[in-house]
Image (tube, rainbow, N blue to C red; front, side, top):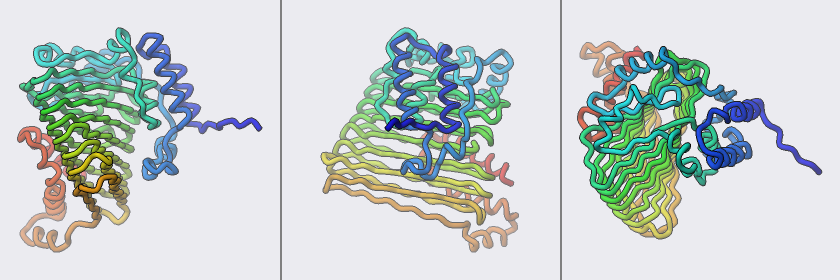
Length: 435
Protein backbone atom coordinates (compact mmCIF):
# COMPACT_ATOMS: atom_id res chain seq x y z
CA UNK A 1 0.00 0.00 0.00
CA UNK A 2 1.27 3.47 -0.92
CA UNK A 3 0.70 6.03 1.83
CA UNK A 4 0.83 9.77 1.10
CA UNK A 5 0.83 12.53 3.68
CA UNK A 6 -1.99 15.00 3.04
CA UNK A 7 -1.09 18.64 3.64
CA UNK A 8 -3.50 21.17 5.09
CA UNK A 9 -4.05 24.48 3.31
CA UNK A 10 -1.66 26.10 5.73
CA UNK A 11 0.94 23.42 5.06
CA UNK A 12 0.73 24.06 1.33
CA UNK A 13 1.02 27.81 1.91
CA UNK A 14 4.21 27.40 3.94
CA UNK A 15 5.69 25.04 1.36
CA UNK A 16 4.98 27.56 -1.40
CA UNK A 17 6.42 30.31 0.80
CA UNK A 18 9.73 28.50 1.23
CA UNK A 19 10.01 27.77 -2.50
CA UNK A 20 9.33 31.38 -3.45
CA UNK A 21 11.60 32.82 -0.76
CA UNK A 22 14.58 30.49 -1.18
CA UNK A 23 16.32 32.86 -3.59
CA UNK A 24 16.12 35.72 -1.04
CA UNK A 25 17.51 33.76 1.89
CA UNK A 26 21.18 34.41 2.72
CA UNK A 27 23.80 31.70 2.81
CA UNK A 28 26.24 29.61 0.84
CA UNK A 29 25.13 26.37 -0.87
CA UNK A 30 26.06 24.50 2.33
CA UNK A 31 23.80 26.83 4.34
CA UNK A 32 20.95 26.37 1.87
CA UNK A 33 21.30 22.61 2.37
CA UNK A 34 20.91 23.13 6.13
CA UNK A 35 17.82 25.24 5.47
CA UNK A 36 16.27 22.56 3.29
CA UNK A 37 16.93 19.93 5.93
CA UNK A 38 15.28 22.14 8.56
CA UNK A 39 12.29 22.68 6.31
CA UNK A 40 11.98 18.94 5.74
CA UNK A 41 11.82 18.55 9.52
CA UNK A 42 9.08 21.15 9.64
CA UNK A 43 7.14 19.50 6.81
CA UNK A 44 7.29 16.19 8.63
CA UNK A 45 5.93 17.79 11.82
CA UNK A 46 3.55 20.37 10.37
CA UNK A 47 2.11 23.36 12.16
CA UNK A 48 1.60 22.56 15.86
CA UNK A 49 -1.92 21.62 16.89
CA UNK A 50 -3.88 20.71 20.02
CA UNK A 51 -3.13 16.98 19.77
CA UNK A 52 0.50 17.75 20.68
CA UNK A 53 0.82 17.97 24.46
CA UNK A 54 3.21 20.96 24.36
CA UNK A 55 0.78 22.85 22.11
CA UNK A 56 -2.58 21.62 23.41
CA UNK A 57 -3.65 25.12 24.47
CA UNK A 58 -2.20 26.94 21.45
CA UNK A 59 -3.45 25.30 18.27
CA UNK A 60 -1.71 27.23 15.50
CA UNK A 61 -3.65 25.43 12.81
CA UNK A 62 -6.84 26.92 14.25
CA UNK A 63 -5.51 30.24 15.56
CA UNK A 64 -3.26 31.29 12.67
CA UNK A 65 -4.89 29.74 9.62
CA UNK A 66 -2.20 30.72 7.10
CA UNK A 67 1.43 31.73 6.88
CA UNK A 68 1.98 35.12 5.29
CA UNK A 69 4.60 35.88 2.61
CA UNK A 70 7.96 37.32 3.62
CA UNK A 71 8.01 41.07 4.16
CA UNK A 72 9.78 43.08 1.49
CA UNK A 73 13.08 44.81 2.23
CA UNK A 74 12.14 48.00 4.13
CA UNK A 75 12.19 51.15 2.00
CA UNK A 76 12.88 54.73 3.10
CA UNK A 77 9.31 55.27 4.31
CA UNK A 78 9.41 52.08 6.38
CA UNK A 79 12.76 53.06 7.92
CA UNK A 80 11.38 56.50 8.76
CA UNK A 81 8.43 54.94 10.63
CA UNK A 82 10.85 52.56 12.34
CA UNK A 83 13.00 55.49 13.51
CA UNK A 84 9.96 56.99 15.23
CA UNK A 85 9.23 53.64 16.86
CA UNK A 86 12.79 53.48 18.20
CA UNK A 87 12.28 56.86 19.85
CA UNK A 88 8.97 55.76 21.36
CA UNK A 89 9.99 52.32 22.60
CA UNK A 90 13.73 52.60 23.16
CA UNK A 91 15.04 52.34 26.70
CA UNK A 92 16.93 55.50 27.64
CA UNK A 93 20.68 54.94 27.63
CA UNK A 94 20.56 51.53 25.99
CA UNK A 95 22.64 50.67 22.91
CA UNK A 96 20.15 49.80 20.17
CA UNK A 97 20.28 47.01 17.60
CA UNK A 98 17.28 47.40 15.30
CA UNK A 99 15.62 44.84 13.03
CA UNK A 100 12.95 46.18 10.66
CA UNK A 101 10.62 43.64 9.04
CA UNK A 102 13.22 40.95 9.71
CA UNK A 103 16.19 42.89 8.30
CA UNK A 104 19.00 44.57 10.27
CA UNK A 105 18.86 48.37 10.05
CA UNK A 106 22.42 49.63 10.52
CA UNK A 107 21.49 53.32 10.31
CA UNK A 108 19.08 52.95 13.25
CA UNK A 109 21.51 50.90 15.35
CA UNK A 110 24.33 51.89 17.69
CA UNK A 111 26.95 49.60 16.19
CA UNK A 112 29.82 52.09 16.54
CA UNK A 113 28.98 52.81 20.19
CA UNK A 114 28.96 49.06 20.91
CA UNK A 115 32.18 48.32 19.04
CA UNK A 116 34.42 49.13 21.99
CA UNK A 117 32.64 46.65 24.29
CA UNK A 118 31.16 43.85 22.18
CA UNK A 119 31.40 42.23 18.77
CA UNK A 120 28.29 42.65 16.62
CA UNK A 121 27.65 40.95 13.31
CA UNK A 122 24.47 40.29 11.40
CA UNK A 123 23.10 36.81 10.79
CA UNK A 124 23.06 37.57 7.07
CA UNK A 125 26.79 38.28 6.82
CA UNK A 126 27.59 35.36 9.13
CA UNK A 127 25.69 32.91 6.93
CA UNK A 128 27.21 34.30 3.74
CA UNK A 129 30.81 34.21 5.02
CA UNK A 130 30.77 31.32 7.48
CA UNK A 131 28.96 28.03 8.00
CA UNK A 132 25.31 27.35 8.75
CA UNK A 133 25.93 26.29 12.37
CA UNK A 134 23.57 28.98 13.64
CA UNK A 135 20.73 27.30 11.76
CA UNK A 136 21.66 23.69 12.52
CA UNK A 137 19.77 22.99 15.75
CA UNK A 138 18.86 19.55 16.99
CA UNK A 139 15.37 20.68 17.99
CA UNK A 140 12.35 18.70 16.87
CA UNK A 141 10.06 21.69 17.50
CA UNK A 142 8.22 22.61 14.32
CA UNK A 143 8.42 26.38 14.77
CA UNK A 144 12.15 26.33 15.55
CA UNK A 145 12.74 24.21 12.45
CA UNK A 146 10.63 26.58 10.34
CA UNK A 147 12.63 29.50 11.73
CA UNK A 148 15.90 27.82 10.75
CA UNK A 149 14.60 27.32 7.23
CA UNK A 150 13.30 30.87 6.73
CA UNK A 151 15.47 33.18 8.88
CA UNK A 152 16.45 36.25 6.85
CA UNK A 153 18.52 38.16 9.39
CA UNK A 154 19.31 38.75 13.06
CA UNK A 155 22.23 39.82 15.22
CA UNK A 156 25.22 37.83 16.44
CA UNK A 157 26.52 39.45 19.62
CA UNK A 158 29.69 38.23 21.36
CA UNK A 159 30.69 39.64 24.77
CA UNK A 160 34.26 38.82 25.79
CA UNK A 161 35.27 37.33 29.13
CA UNK A 162 35.23 39.79 32.01
CA UNK A 163 33.31 42.53 30.18
CA UNK A 164 31.24 44.88 32.36
CA UNK A 165 28.87 46.61 29.94
CA UNK A 166 28.41 50.31 30.60
CA UNK A 167 24.86 50.29 29.18
CA UNK A 168 22.17 47.72 28.36
CA UNK A 169 21.88 46.30 24.85
CA UNK A 170 18.37 46.58 23.39
CA UNK A 171 17.38 44.50 20.37
CA UNK A 172 14.26 46.12 18.87
CA UNK A 173 12.10 44.21 16.38
CA UNK A 174 9.90 46.65 14.43
CA UNK A 175 7.10 45.65 12.06
CA UNK A 176 6.20 48.17 9.34
CA UNK A 177 4.77 45.86 6.66
CA UNK A 178 1.15 44.78 6.92
CA UNK A 179 0.07 41.22 6.14
CA UNK A 180 3.64 39.95 5.93
CA UNK A 181 5.92 37.69 7.95
CA UNK A 182 9.39 38.14 9.43
CA UNK A 183 11.74 35.31 10.42
CA UNK A 184 14.71 36.36 12.55
CA UNK A 185 17.37 34.42 14.43
CA UNK A 186 19.96 35.89 16.79
CA UNK A 187 22.81 34.57 18.89
CA UNK A 188 24.16 35.99 22.15
CA UNK A 189 27.52 34.62 23.29
CA UNK A 190 28.23 35.90 26.78
CA UNK A 191 31.64 35.10 28.22
CA UNK A 192 32.91 34.25 31.68
CA UNK A 193 32.56 36.88 34.37
CA UNK A 194 30.39 39.16 32.22
CA UNK A 195 27.92 41.59 33.76
CA UNK A 196 25.28 42.59 31.19
CA UNK A 197 21.64 43.52 30.60
CA UNK A 198 19.97 42.44 27.35
CA UNK A 199 16.53 43.80 26.37
CA UNK A 200 14.38 42.50 23.51
CA UNK A 201 11.41 44.56 22.32
CA UNK A 202 8.73 43.73 19.74
CA UNK A 203 6.68 46.69 18.47
CA UNK A 204 4.66 47.81 15.46
CA UNK A 205 5.15 50.97 13.39
CA UNK A 206 1.95 51.28 11.40
CA UNK A 207 1.79 47.58 10.54
CA UNK A 208 -1.17 45.28 11.12
CA UNK A 209 -1.95 41.58 10.75
CA UNK A 210 1.72 40.60 10.50
CA UNK A 211 3.51 37.49 11.76
CA UNK A 212 6.81 37.13 13.63
CA UNK A 213 8.83 33.94 14.11
CA UNK A 214 11.93 34.71 16.15
CA UNK A 215 14.61 32.48 17.70
CA UNK A 216 17.37 33.49 20.11
CA UNK A 217 20.31 31.24 21.00
CA UNK A 218 22.04 32.28 24.23
CA UNK A 219 25.15 30.81 25.85
CA UNK A 220 26.37 32.27 29.14
CA UNK A 221 29.78 31.42 30.62
CA UNK A 222 30.84 30.89 34.22
CA UNK A 223 30.65 33.48 37.03
CA UNK A 224 28.46 35.83 35.01
CA UNK A 225 25.57 38.07 36.07
CA UNK A 226 23.04 38.59 33.28
CA UNK A 227 19.57 40.16 33.09
CA UNK A 228 17.54 39.22 30.01
CA UNK A 229 14.34 41.26 29.62
CA UNK A 230 11.78 40.61 26.87
CA UNK A 231 8.93 43.06 26.14
CA UNK A 232 6.30 42.05 23.57
CA UNK A 233 3.92 44.86 22.54
CA UNK A 234 2.94 43.88 19.02
CA UNK A 235 -0.09 45.12 17.10
CA UNK A 236 -3.45 43.78 18.38
CA UNK A 237 -3.91 41.52 15.35
CA UNK A 238 -0.30 40.28 15.05
CA UNK A 239 1.10 36.77 15.61
CA UNK A 240 4.39 36.35 17.49
CA UNK A 241 6.12 33.02 18.12
CA UNK A 242 9.49 33.37 19.88
CA UNK A 243 11.83 30.55 20.93
CA UNK A 244 14.65 31.18 23.42
CA UNK A 245 17.29 28.46 23.85
CA UNK A 246 19.57 29.33 26.76
CA UNK A 247 22.54 27.49 28.28
CA UNK A 248 23.92 28.74 31.62
CA UNK A 249 27.44 28.08 32.93
CA UNK A 250 28.68 27.55 36.49
CA UNK A 251 28.18 30.01 39.37
CA UNK A 252 26.18 32.30 37.10
CA UNK A 253 23.12 34.40 37.88
CA UNK A 254 20.48 34.78 35.17
CA UNK A 255 17.38 36.91 35.63
CA UNK A 256 14.96 36.30 32.75
CA UNK A 257 11.78 38.43 32.53
CA UNK A 258 9.00 38.47 29.93
CA UNK A 259 6.02 40.80 29.58
CA UNK A 260 3.31 40.35 26.93
CA UNK A 261 0.90 43.26 26.35
CA UNK A 262 -0.12 42.84 22.70
CA UNK A 263 -0.63 40.48 19.80
CA UNK A 264 -3.65 38.44 18.78
CA UNK A 265 -1.62 35.23 19.22
CA UNK A 266 1.71 35.08 21.03
CA UNK A 267 3.87 32.31 22.43
CA UNK A 268 7.18 32.53 24.20
CA UNK A 269 8.79 29.13 24.52
CA UNK A 270 11.93 29.10 26.60
CA UNK A 271 14.31 26.17 26.96
CA UNK A 272 16.83 26.93 29.71
CA UNK A 273 19.56 24.46 30.66
CA UNK A 274 21.56 24.93 33.85
CA UNK A 275 24.76 23.28 32.68
CA UNK A 276 27.19 24.51 35.36
CA UNK A 277 27.10 23.90 39.10
CA UNK A 278 26.17 26.64 41.55
CA UNK A 279 24.04 28.70 39.14
CA UNK A 280 20.96 30.70 40.11
CA UNK A 281 18.06 31.24 37.73
CA UNK A 282 15.11 33.59 38.22
CA UNK A 283 12.35 33.44 35.59
CA UNK A 284 9.52 35.97 35.95
CA UNK A 285 6.69 36.80 33.59
CA UNK A 286 3.55 38.90 33.19
CA UNK A 287 0.74 38.50 30.66
CA UNK A 288 -1.62 41.48 30.31
CA UNK A 289 -4.33 40.39 27.89
CA UNK A 290 -7.68 41.78 26.75
CA UNK A 291 -10.35 41.39 24.05
CA UNK A 292 -9.64 38.03 22.33
CA UNK A 293 -5.85 37.99 22.73
CA UNK A 294 -4.12 34.66 23.27
CA UNK A 295 -0.83 34.68 25.21
CA UNK A 296 1.18 31.51 25.85
CA UNK A 297 4.29 31.23 28.04
CA UNK A 298 5.86 27.78 27.89
CA UNK A 299 9.08 27.30 29.88
CA UNK A 300 11.32 24.26 30.34
CA UNK A 301 14.05 24.55 32.98
CA UNK A 302 16.54 21.68 32.80
CA UNK A 303 18.69 21.12 35.90
CA UNK A 304 21.49 19.11 34.30
CA UNK A 305 24.04 19.39 37.14
CA UNK A 306 24.00 19.53 40.96
CA UNK A 307 23.73 22.53 43.31
CA UNK A 308 21.60 24.85 41.16
CA UNK A 309 18.61 26.99 42.12
CA UNK A 310 15.66 28.10 39.99
CA UNK A 311 12.66 30.29 40.82
CA UNK A 312 9.73 30.96 38.50
CA UNK A 313 7.06 33.58 39.23
CA UNK A 314 4.36 34.16 36.63
CA UNK A 315 1.35 36.49 36.71
CA UNK A 316 -1.51 36.80 34.20
CA UNK A 317 -4.21 39.48 34.09
CA UNK A 318 -6.97 38.51 31.66
CA UNK A 319 -9.91 40.69 30.59
CA UNK A 320 -12.83 40.26 28.17
CA UNK A 321 -12.50 36.93 26.29
CA UNK A 322 -8.71 36.73 26.34
CA UNK A 323 -6.85 33.47 27.01
CA UNK A 324 -3.60 33.10 28.96
CA UNK A 325 -1.51 29.93 29.02
CA UNK A 326 1.35 29.05 31.33
CA UNK A 327 3.18 25.75 30.95
CA UNK A 328 6.19 25.34 33.20
CA UNK A 329 8.31 22.23 33.45
CA UNK A 330 11.24 21.66 35.80
CA UNK A 331 13.47 18.70 34.88
CA UNK A 332 15.98 17.38 37.42
CA UNK A 333 18.50 14.99 35.86
CA UNK A 334 19.77 11.90 37.77
CA UNK A 335 23.10 13.56 38.65
CA UNK A 336 21.55 16.91 39.63
CA UNK A 337 21.51 16.35 43.38
CA UNK A 338 20.94 19.29 45.75
CA UNK A 339 18.66 20.98 43.21
CA UNK A 340 16.32 23.66 44.54
CA UNK A 341 13.52 24.48 42.13
CA UNK A 342 10.25 26.35 42.76
CA UNK A 343 7.52 27.53 40.43
CA UNK A 344 4.37 29.59 41.10
CA UNK A 345 1.78 30.91 38.66
CA UNK A 346 -1.27 33.05 39.45
CA UNK A 347 -4.02 34.27 37.11
CA UNK A 348 -6.38 37.19 37.71
CA UNK A 349 -9.64 36.96 35.75
CA UNK A 350 -11.37 40.30 35.16
CA UNK A 351 -14.40 38.94 33.31
CA UNK A 352 -16.56 35.82 33.34
CA UNK A 353 -15.37 34.90 29.82
CA UNK A 354 -11.65 35.22 30.49
CA UNK A 355 -9.69 31.94 30.45
CA UNK A 356 -6.47 30.83 32.11
CA UNK A 357 -4.75 27.47 31.64
CA UNK A 358 -1.90 26.79 34.06
CA UNK A 359 0.09 23.58 33.80
CA UNK A 360 3.11 23.33 36.12
CA UNK A 361 5.11 20.08 35.89
CA UNK A 362 8.00 18.44 37.72
CA UNK A 363 10.14 15.65 36.26
CA UNK A 364 12.54 14.57 39.00
CA UNK A 365 15.10 11.81 38.50
CA UNK A 366 17.25 12.56 41.57
CA UNK A 367 16.43 11.92 45.22
CA UNK A 368 18.19 14.71 47.17
CA UNK A 369 16.26 17.74 45.89
CA UNK A 370 13.82 20.41 47.03
CA UNK A 371 11.23 21.15 44.36
CA UNK A 372 7.67 22.43 44.32
CA UNK A 373 5.03 24.20 42.27
CA UNK A 374 1.67 25.90 42.64
CA UNK A 375 -1.08 27.50 40.56
CA UNK A 376 -4.07 29.68 41.40
CA UNK A 377 -6.79 31.54 39.47
CA UNK A 378 -9.39 33.97 40.76
CA UNK A 379 -11.06 37.36 40.52
CA UNK A 380 -10.32 40.69 42.17
CA UNK A 381 -11.05 40.72 45.89
CA UNK A 382 -14.44 42.42 46.38
CA UNK A 383 -13.59 43.50 49.92
CA UNK A 384 -10.41 45.26 48.76
CA UNK A 385 -12.33 46.93 45.93
CA UNK A 386 -14.95 48.11 48.43
CA UNK A 387 -12.23 49.45 50.73
CA UNK A 388 -10.65 51.52 47.95
CA UNK A 389 -13.94 52.77 46.54
CA UNK A 390 -15.13 53.76 50.01
CA UNK A 391 -12.17 56.14 50.09
CA UNK A 392 -13.27 57.91 46.93
CA UNK A 393 -11.48 56.01 44.16
CA UNK A 394 -13.45 55.32 40.95
CA UNK A 395 -13.91 51.63 40.19
CA UNK A 396 -11.37 51.54 37.32
CA UNK A 397 -8.73 53.31 39.42
CA UNK A 398 -9.32 50.92 42.30
CA UNK A 399 -8.99 47.95 39.95
CA UNK A 400 -5.80 49.43 38.49
CA UNK A 401 -4.20 49.71 41.93
CA UNK A 402 -5.00 46.10 42.75
CA UNK A 403 -3.75 44.88 39.37
CA UNK A 404 -0.47 46.77 39.79
CA UNK A 405 0.01 45.16 43.18
CA UNK A 406 -0.82 41.74 41.70
CA UNK A 407 1.82 41.90 38.94
CA UNK A 408 4.30 43.76 41.12
CA UNK A 409 5.88 40.64 42.61
CA UNK A 410 7.10 39.57 39.17
CA UNK A 411 8.19 43.03 38.01
CA UNK A 412 10.02 43.76 41.25
CA UNK A 413 12.50 41.01 40.41
CA UNK A 414 14.09 43.37 37.83
CA UNK A 415 17.15 44.70 39.67
CA UNK A 416 17.84 47.83 37.59
CA UNK A 417 15.70 50.66 38.97
CA UNK A 418 15.35 52.54 35.68
CA UNK A 419 14.51 49.42 33.73
CA UNK A 420 11.99 48.36 36.36
CA UNK A 421 10.29 51.76 36.09
CA UNK A 422 10.27 51.40 32.30
CA UNK A 423 8.44 48.07 32.58
CA UNK A 424 6.01 49.47 35.16
CA UNK A 425 5.26 52.27 32.70
CA UNK A 426 4.33 49.72 30.02
CA UNK A 427 1.94 48.02 32.46
CA UNK A 428 0.40 51.37 33.42
CA UNK A 429 -0.21 52.26 29.76
CA UNK A 430 -1.95 48.90 29.30
CA UNK A 431 -4.20 49.72 32.24
CA UNK A 432 -4.98 53.14 30.76
CA UNK A 433 -5.93 51.56 27.42
CA UNK A 434 -8.16 49.12 29.27
CA UNK A 435 -9.99 52.04 30.89
